[in-house]
Length: 408
Ligand code: F3S
Image (spheres, rainbow, N blue to C red):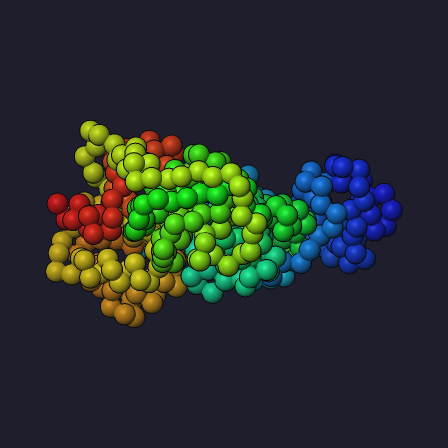
């Protein structure tokens, strides 16, 4: 662990001095309360491991580790302890919880789980966190500007923030993100340093990529080929917000990349790497085939991984107009996006067709393991977790086909 060597210095892993301001030292000494002290200890331990020389201010935080399914009683106890005197210093939102906070009964979530999940949310709320539970904070007002240091946890949002928004964030764990929220600081290392954001491999995409499912498939191909290395991708003519969020989720899931650069589309400057990899249509087809399993009778359809945008909800409403779904069909989205869909009349059409909104949550963090055997989705990330976490087979397809599948 860290030791205070002198009033304003700590030593990081590399034996270099980690400089603290007077205010940060007081935080560490407990003069700003227990939650802040604990948070500083977490941040400085991280800084020590990763060789940070100092802390920097953050302007936005997104905290993962919200589902009671993942937190358990130990996590709940930890949050209650911090909530005794902790208050967030910057705009802070949450990742999806284990259930729709308003509509959980319709989705079959047990009452004992709901009670614990509400206690988790209450602790966050007490600390001043905005209890909007979404993996797309950038769609609901937590949207940093280019160059801003932030501390986000959800991997798809981290990759989107670094790559598409040009903000700077490491992939934080739930506790370190919350520590940043309570102190307004994060250690300066990793994605906060420009040298670590430079592309290492050039990816030449030699085929047309269109639709969230194909952008997800591309993310899988690249992730599996290059791992977490930053890439410079050429050959993509255009990409919508929805396609970029799908791609960000997939490249982070299958390779762990926290940043990519896409020529003509993303805003960061980078050096163009010499090493090249070419991606062809066969690679995309192979990826789609791997996510579309045989002997799989679809019993669950889901859209909204990452959480659906208002444009996606509009599209689903158009496709569902006058139809009836015959399978369990969840649309996962942020509560504010759902509210907008209510106003626009999309929710009415969707719900009259028999599909269900699962706001505040998602199919991965909800306690649904074993309930469904075969998921149909447009999300490559959704396929990965349905298979690995929920033991469900998968089929990936475009939104139009998903609606057809749900109505079959
Ligand atoms: Fe979001 Fe859940 Fe997918 S957190 S990215 S909807 S796995």
